[in-house]
Image (cartoon, rainbow, N blue to C red; front, side, top):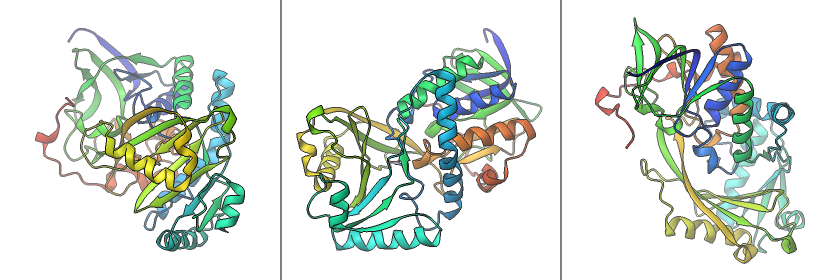
Length: 391
Ligand code: GLY
């Protein structure tokens, strides 16, 4: 080991979840460090940034809905605080979302979703196909109906990441650019990590926030190792030329042949089209099939999309958990906390995760709204042989 650094809090992983945790920890007065080879990278560089608590509601996920809504409610103040602090615009847009149906099956699915939304006390309005097209004239003539959800907004995750990096720097967070290779455990307590370069980073508390890689840190006892897995999402970015604007005025989404497709229009003319959902391990290849399916489905919703320049194709890895909900707070190993497993909701859950982890680091307990998401709800049976480093 070459050198030793110590801090009160060491966050393993510098994606948006790690950054918000580090920022909030530093604001509470903890000396805080982040270890990551490329802070600000990760899934948020790919994500579309929908804040879709209502349109992404699923049966069986009502507990997660509570956390999603708690985070959505915090977004206005959270975004304003970050912008005031850094002077950076986050692309936070309260534009609403329209979820549409293209055929009778889609319409039945949306009707079911609408019932669930209403049972859950959420605001969502059923519209005819004609009413949908009146709102969004670029929609295909075949759209059969839809749900207007004015409360589901969007943010630009790349800008959010940039602002969180700047906020961390201002708050005095130290960045160690390297791979965390092994958790250090001393007297049955997490005490830091050793990096691939042999650097020893000591800490009073360690937060594992490594996204889909969180289950691969060596040295973490098997029974507290987070059961997260990578779920690949391919995402396209197009550009709406000035002469076509406004192409879409809100997020438009649908389930086409069983696959989710969404189109997220930014104020700067970017149009994000996502996303595939593939269980292929650590693969982040952009495939012809993935791009084809996204464009085919998006084209069925909004035929004019084929006129737009395609400016970027990229794939990222969502950190999936067994119940699609995050793992937050203290684990069975003293000094080790988790902030991972956010799956489809990492951007949405960023504000509430930062607050929950700051509370847990300060008090040892999760705040009320985050208690159902304790990692202790899973007893991991992962054999230690699976605990290895990413290639
Ligand atoms: N929340 C959107 C996605 O995961 O694709």
